[in-house]
Image (tube, rainbow, N blue to C red; front, side):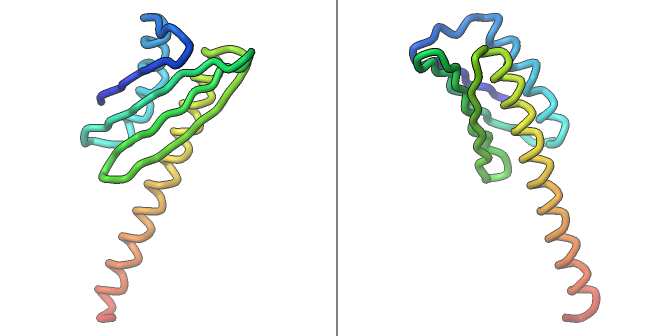
Length: 107
């Protein structure tokens, strides 16, 4: 898993990188193949914004969130990405299952 972290108007500290890497490890559990994740951290006025783009299997999954604390925003982002990836995997499995059943029935 390759994680690229960039900051806009914020210095990305090693502690932030470690926290992001730790929280995004649960995404790795869903896939066997390599995953590319681009994370952008921003601070606008008093809000801490974070967005991520996950590239896996030729598809992009995007999530963004904001909060008053960067670490809470990172936790929320990890949760959002995890839910989106689970939803995408279920959708793919459902589509594959439907195609194989139709194929077996001679349709």
